[in-house]
Length: 131
Image: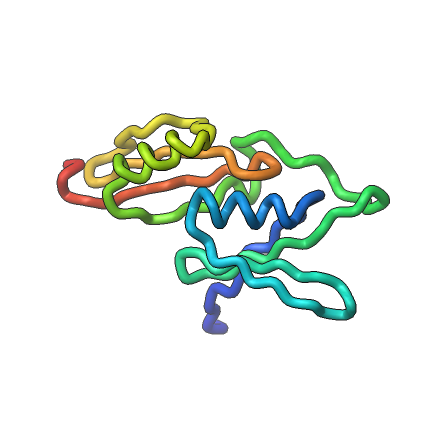
């Protein structure tokens, strides 16, 4: 069996700059801009992972973003500490919550927010205090 290591998530956006700014402002992502093949490229580093943002032009043949829940890749999940503090910060910034904080099972507390292009983002805290 091959050994796999997670490398990246790839997003497509009609406005990569706005998408990057949202992740930077709302979730603290590091935005990395470069030029490759005479085109601007925008990547993010967040939670130790890579998110690549590809531009979608008016003539590109892409489907519209799905509305979650969907079959296949449904959401991106990020672990946080002190989830309630993070929620308060994001609400103050105007982030849209699609699922309010709840405890789906002992030891875990989760919520979901809507990112750019309808991306579903889970924020979760695993802690014995939620037993």
